[in-house]
Length: 279
Image (cartoon, rainbow, N blue to C red):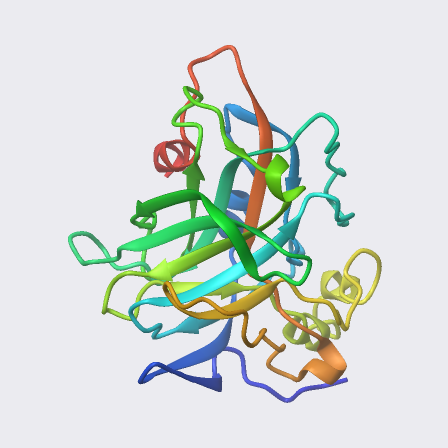
């Protein structure tokens, strides 16, 4: 099915807290994609979990721009989920969240205020935050260039010096909530894309992988939600593909969790620091 959308055009409008957030599709470069492979990481997770689609050679993402201050977006993870391209987690041996990789777009250069916060809560089966807070970090996203995707790593082990977040009390069901703590509207949230890949099949054979295993669509189950305003969280809308949920399903944030890391022989180094070196 052809959508007739022009790449990069603003095609969706989200009105939140007085801000009009927009969504549009952009292509990823090969260097962008390398960031999602754990290049150079000294931390070796026993398992990882992420729900997004990303096809090397046909990679497009959807960015949510102009995000209001105190706005929170989140993702519901369950360690018992079986997800294509990720080895299943052995919850009998591993119930510790150590690393979260978060993708952002259009990060402003320092010293611009780009403050964000990430919190982790146990959740019920539907993805509503429950119980005590498990983790809490203020951070600035990694700056690369305003026209690039960067991945910021949140390391709850403090360079391997501390245990990660214990998920045993919530049976591995948890929510990651990211809140925009600045009034600049930056950076942009990054979601995956289905429609543009499908439309590009005629000109790029790699794009024809969309629709085959494991890139099956429409995805009718989603994990990424608008959670409203900080401290008044409530799971609200999910994100439809810009060509429509009925045909193409929901979109997922480009976020990955790493569990029960094992340090290499060299001194552990945070994922953010590693990527800064590789730049």
